[in-house]
Each structure stands twice: as C-alpha cells, then as structure tokens.
Amino acid sequence: MGLFRKAALTVARGLGLTDRQFVQWFGGEPSHSGESVTVDTALTLDAVWACTRLVSQTIATLPLPLYERDEQGRSRVAPQHPLYRVLHDRPNAEMTAVEFWQALFACKLLWGNGYAEIVRGAGDRVVALIPMRPDRVQVTRETDGSLTYRHTYQGQTQVLAEDQVLHLKGFSLDGQMGMSAVAAGRHSLGMAMGAERTAGTIFKNGMRPSGVLTAPSYLTDPQRAEARKYVEKFEGARNTGRVPLLEGGWKFESLTLPPDDAQLLETRGFNVEVICRWFGVLPVMIGHMDKATAWGTGLEQMNLWFLTYTLRSHLKAAEQAIWTKCLSPVEQRRFFAEFNVEGLMRADSKGRSELYRSEVTNALATPNEIRARENRPPLPGGDQLFMQGAMLPIDKLGQAPAGADAGAAPAQMERNRAGGALDDRPFLFPQLEALRDIVERLRTKAYRPGQARDERGRWTSGFARALAAVGLGGKPVRATLGKVRRPGAIRALTGVDVSGFSFTITNQGLAHVHKKRPGLLARPGDHATLREVVLRPDRVLAGSPSRANGQPRILIEKTVQGVRYAFVGEVQAAKRRIEMVTIWD
Image (tube, rainbow, N blue to C red; front, side, top):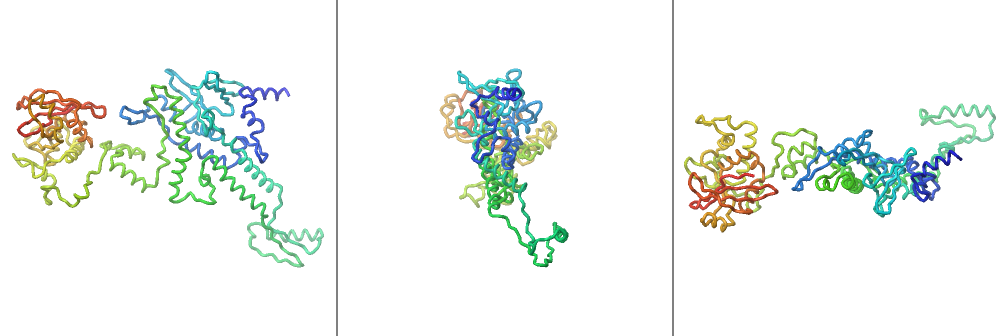
C-alpha cells in the first residue's frame, strides 16, 4: 500500500479529485460497450491514429513565417524578428519546427487542448516554446479572474501564469477549455474497440476451416493416418485447384462465413467512418476506399475541402493564439504569423501555369514572385508589375487609330518631322509607359549613362540613346495629362487665366525626372500617380519665373499613398498649357 499511496499522491498532486483527468488516469472514460476509452487506448484504433497523424503532420509541414505590415497595409516576411526563427525553424533546443507543431496539434486533437510553455529572454522577447502534455496540466481560474497552469512532471509541479503558456483550444462551449474528441466520442470509440476485440477473439480462438471431409463411418487410427496423408496432397496455395478423388462414400462440404461474422466486418468498416466524423477527416484520406477514390480530378477538390473544413479552423486558432500570447501590444500592430497553405492549393502543372499567367498579366503578382513559389532564383527586371494593355471597348473593335498608316513602322508613326510638329495623332501616355519600360531595360543592359556618344561624337545618356533608338529623338514629344481643374488658385498666383488649359509632359521632362530619380517614373501605373498629382493637388504655391524664357511657374504638392510629390509647372499662356518641368518625391 505504501508504493501505491506514493504513486497516487504523485499523480494527484496537480489534479483535483473531481477533475475529469483523474478519471482518464484510472480506468478512462466510461462507455456503453464497457471498454475503457483513454487517449492511449484510442490510439490503438488505426482510424484514430491515421486521423491524428494526417491532420497534425499536414499542419506541421506548412511553413509558418512571421509577417510585418507596413503603413499601406502591405505585408512582407520579417526574418529579422526573433520570433520568426522560433516559429519557422526551431521552437526549442530539442525540436525542429515540424516536430514541435506535430506534437502540439496531436495533443489538441486527442485531448482538446495543446499547451506550450513560453520562454522569454531579454526585452521580454520569446526565445523558445516547450510543449507540455495535456494530461499533466491542470488549468484553474484564480479569484482575480486570471488563469493558472500547473504542469506536473517527474514529481515536480511548475506554476505558470496565463501569459507564459501558448494554449491551443479545440472545439469549446465556454471558450476557456477545449473538448476532447476522445472523451466526447467515447461511446463510438468504445464500440469500435469492442468490435476489434471481438474480431481478434475470433481469430484467436475460433476454428474456421474452408470445408470438411465426411467419412461414411468411424475410422481406425491407421485409417485416420492414411486419410491425413492423402489430404495433405491437396493442402496449401500451391495445390489450389487440384480435384481430389473421394472413394468409399466420402463427401466434401464447403463452409461459408456466417451472417453474424459478415455483419461484424461491416460494423468495423462503419466504425472507420464514424471516427472520421469526430476528427473532421474524409475516410478516403486515411485509406478507407470502399465508396470513394483518391485519384483523378477529385484529388484537388478533396484537398480544398480538407483545407477549408478541417485545417482552416486549426490554423486560424493557432495564428490568433500566437498573435495574442507571443507578441507585445506594440508589436501586434505590425507583426502577425500566418501559415502558408500554397503547397496544399498547388494543382497540376497545366492548371498552375494558367494561374501564374493570369496573375502576371493582370498585375496581381510579379514574375519574380511566381519564380519564388517554384523555388527558382529571381531575374533582373522581374520585380515589376505588368498589365495587359490590348483591351478595347467593343464599339472600337476593327477601327484603326486616327492617322495610322498600315504600312508604317511604329517608330515612324510617332516620330517628329525635322523642325515640324507631331504626326497626325498625338503621342499618347500609354506609349510613354511602354517607352519607359524599354528605357529601363536598355539602361540596365546596354545603355549606361556616360558611356555612349551620339552621331556627332558627344557624350549622351542612356535615356537619350534609347529615345533615338525608337525614333523619338529631336524635338520634344508631348503627352496630355488632363485639363486644369483648379484655375482660380493658379490665376491668383500668376495672374494668368488658365481656364481650359491642359497639363502636359514631354520626353525631355521624363529624361530629367529619370536622371534625378531613376525609379520614380519607371513602374507601370505611374501615369495614374502623375494625373493624381496635377489634377487633384493638395495645395498650389507660387514658383520663381523661368530664367530661360521668363514664363511664370507654379509649385504643386500632393501626397499619394504616403509619398509626398512636388510638381513644377511652367505656364505657357500662348500655347494654353502648363508644361511639367520636373517632379520629385
């Protein structure tokens, strides 16, 4: 009695006598079948083992990076944060990330709760996460409303505060403790365990030959020995199909499986489906193929179902628990953890190729982002967004642009005549966008500033060389940004009535901007930023007159997506336009 008393005190040190965990330690949860249902006995069922292993290992193999959110709401990976390595690489000195998350989610599936001690270092930063078995943890609510976690292991009891434990809760009715699938489903699991025990007893004690030979009368010992020697010629798989010759009134009677035993086999198969319901897993995903298949086109939809209805609740609960317990209130404004489920959503090569093509052509992802998903190195110029620009209104289909010559080269259509004006149609802004893209590629590959000479032997920049290469050298090519919408403010500063004037930009202005700020106007979509600056300014200020021609100038300021832009425009009253001289951020 002394040894038993000492063992009981050691176990009950962290448990109350009314605690349900005490029942699980001594005899397990009661079930209708009379079987003792505990986590350990439930894991002897292949369906429970397979469901737990499938969910926990699938989640454990998903990458769990830490992200940082900027002021514009865009997210990027934050490997510089100490918590990144703990979540993504190594939670503690003894475990890898896969081993840790597999153990934590397995505990959550079986006990309804997963616990991990949060170890903090300098600056209250999380430096390690150490898992704790739920059957060794007791959770109590103190008088001040806080939770206390008592972890008992090897005779030692550790008392942890609420902010020292990462607690993953399963399905719950009170939001404080998760419900154990093993405890709640004890009757179903007990019935499955009883069916397994019955089947094992049949194979252990049952006598179930395939048939019997019936003799016409009682045999003597020599006759029995001779009969056994004769029957051995037809036994075994090698002799299957041989037809024995029965003489003297001998008969062979075949034995079939009794209906009760056949129903036992059906019951065992049905128990697999019942257990899968408790864990939210499709039976086919653990190898139960009686009514479904895991091959063909249904595989992708099955993975989507598994992610949506089974894994999503586990993933979101873990992400929010990490955000709440592992980040300070200040860090919670910028940082968050999120599982990367891209691997589960990956389709076949053809479907993946179509998805990538759609994302790139619709400016949803850059080429280098797509290459990163395929674990390929980035390429120069692959960090820009691209947009398919060939779309037209349906009533414009089949119409050629005004002044376009079918036999003329694109460079000739937009080229200025020597000393003259533009060709028949003005230079449109989308073509300036394409020009900037060409210039950017030429600048990084062939046209380096300060290393090229023009036809007169003068040093020229890469931008000017590129303009000449596409036939846009010489006089400025001008594009209209839009009509002036605040003429009163400009008139008050310059004394010029600019009603009906237009804002314009030239290739020389672009060259100046590109020289001062190489990346400012080199991205698709910057034309929308320019229009936003000049047409909806925050304020208009007076500028100094131009030293070259004495034209009055204005200064426009505008904040777009957190970036402050300043625009200098030259008011040309005779030409009824305000021409952009420069812009900077």
